[in-house]
Amino acid sequence: MISNMSDLGVWAKALYNGDLLSPETQQARLQTQPVEGLGAEYGEGILAGDGLWGHSGEINGFSTDMYYIPEQDATMVISVNRCDATYDSESGDVRGAVLKSLFPEYVPSG
Image 1 (cartoon, rainbow, N blue to C red):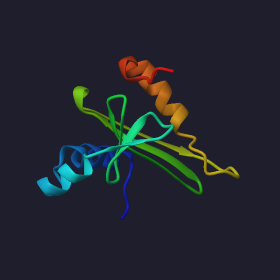
Image 2: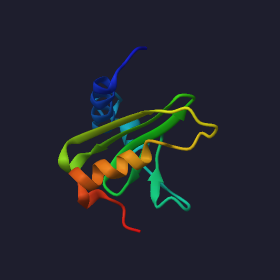
Image 3: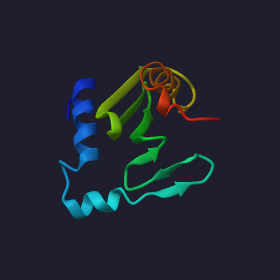
Image 4: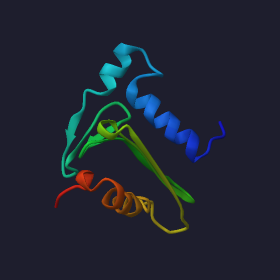
């Protein structure tokens, strides 16, 4: 599959809204459980916390965050090119800056 940032934005919204899955599957994936030490909850392939729903991921060369804010009907996709020795997220800091600038009410406290 070949996609770009715009495609990921469409995908994030459709995936959260349940436009791609059966109602039963969608309901199951939104049944989240707390993740110790993270301050968020995780379902089947979806992270929920601070009003955001989505996922982050890292592979060699890229760090990407894809989140949907249902109360704002807003989609946020951030992809950072990277070349480092770790698999630490490099897009999380950018996500925080975007939230602080555009959606300060969704910036995690603490």
